[in-house]
Amino acid sequence: MKRDLHPEYGPVVVRDQTSGETFLTRSTIVGTRRLPTITWTDGETYPVLDVEISSSSHPVWTGTARPIERGGQIEKFQRRYGRTR
Image (tube, rainbow, N blue to C red; front, top):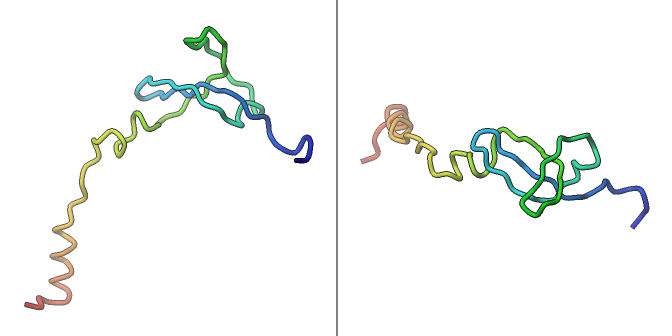
């Protein structure tokens, strides 16, 4: 690998602003901007990345997504092209 080509890759705490859930992961965002820090459960201090939505608050992943009503589309198709039965 070439030196000084790849961005810095290090641990970062991601905090979901909607649910308050936090988790520790690794990211290249560590070397790109100055982030606030937080003391994690292991006693170490890590930069914090605040996000508006994550898997802990997204409707698809939490099971709160509403199903799309398909009846209207079928009726529209049948009105446009007629019944085949």
